[in-house]
Length: 384
Image (tube, rainbow, N blue to C red; front, side):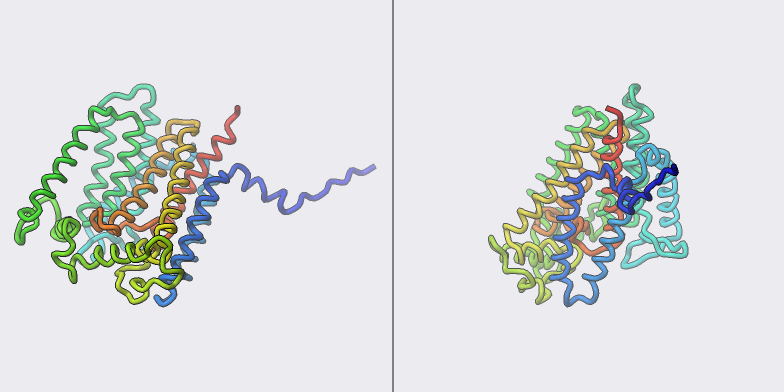
């Protein structure tokens, strides 16, 4: 008698690839992606092919997420040092012979034009998580100093370009790893107090600090103007304060329920500058109102809470630090973008995850979320 072996179905062969995917995380991603597509359709329908491009970028990011999710965290750990080294080398190359656009030298032509600072958003937390994993069980203050130097080198190179927004994001991604690794509160509280006092002094002495001709030394002129514009945008309502003022008008005019899908007057009469990129949150708030913005915030909160849960349950120190840093960095993206559009933070060019137009930022987000998904899967496959 000959045994008959049935050929497995296509789903039986493909399903192992999807096994272990984190359903709550996937749900949060899909909901925010849907919100991004709806918003881009409204704000970009009379803006060329932005909606189609946004959809393609989102599909590419989801594909990247899916591929990265198949890579085990142990393999990612082995890539940390090479990625960091290549990233710093590319930043040095940008400093020496990078491409300049609009007064900023941020790009490098290696056959295709790339922006190496984007790589550091992922390479930085990878490198520091690798470092603290290697020092696990024998951490001392010097290890935190070394980590600080690893963070300071690329941050300084990016700030020199100048690119304040990306510098803040790279610093945040690294500082989160250092904090989660166990940095003492005794070292955290003093600089926080210094920054808080500095902000109070700046507000109280705004007229003196923001007077014409005053040089702040540590900041470029455009950065100084952004801080001064934040403090009082109505000093130049048709110039440097125009972005913030129009953003606040759009958010306020949305009211509780919003003006309705594709009905935003500030948006479609083109009062909101960069309405498909940095200031898309203002367009969203105008059309969907307080109810819509609260729902969007809840979506981000759900994503962050799920990411932190994955970090807490991760099987290794490397995975915990990396998942925690990536999750908190997503929070920084959303908080800074909403804050700058609302007039409570300076305009620094940080996109709103899933919502703002931009292929590089979208793919970088896909890589980060793919790492989160991979860490979640590794926890599920750990022996009980």
